[in-house]
Length: 396
Image (cartoon, rainbow, N blue to C red; front, side):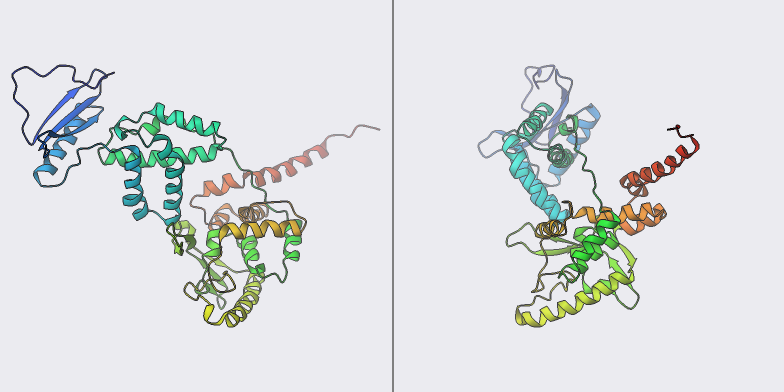
């Protein structure tokens, strides 16, 4: 298909002057607008093209471009490639407006997947077919559905910005089929396994960290982002309002950032076992601080840190946790399964879903209900098992 106007310009018309625009419909049915913005140093015209689904939409864009040009606001006339656009989007939008971890993840996806596969295309020539082929190729390369979905999501969000910047008329990533995600089944510890695990880590340097994880259900980033100002031994409360993240620049820096949702910020009462574990941990940490002397890093005053006061690396912590599980004779699990252990236990004990939601820091009660629906099903299964008592047993 061609993007030429359905009707050629009438012969004899003069060259379109500065600050004039035209609107036409292509043979493919797409409305386009062209705005004349003077001439380049070599004498060739400077034009800006926009497109849209309706004439009214294009007319609004043309009017805005003419207004910007008349007020002296620079109007970019060249169409960037996908690579150049993504680079600009990352630096001017994501890095400025999003959390460091989000920027780091988007940067990785763009550099590893999107730019190598799609970067050469002019952004206004990128099609849904290009994107779908790229997603299919990623599946062929062995990427999981969740990883492919993340690639599509980053591109979709980026192209939404391109639409707002009038670089494209529609988001073609939304026209592609989202990949099927693999569901990860949570594997919470049973009460017996919790006892076995806690017995094994008794006296361990990170005992208090695991006690907080199991008994309060905090996310890993929330645990690593706790400072001693968040712990009130007098009132027996814990203020959860930050997460630990690492900057994307090098050398990377530990940052304390606000949680994604308002519900994630919460005050939790501390059970006596947690208070005792934190007090022992505080004493041990003060001893480490004396030993470290001038090498201690007091900047963040973290509850859980290295022997010199620096922030803990989440990946390294997860490896140590899984090694500890193996030493305790327990099945391998994700660190996040400690959080599921808390939620599953509370649900099994018939704690009201609203209270579970508040403790876990879920943004919606539906999240709580959906996440721990399997616990309710187990309870219902046990209840229905009693129905069999009404049936006569076969004589032997």
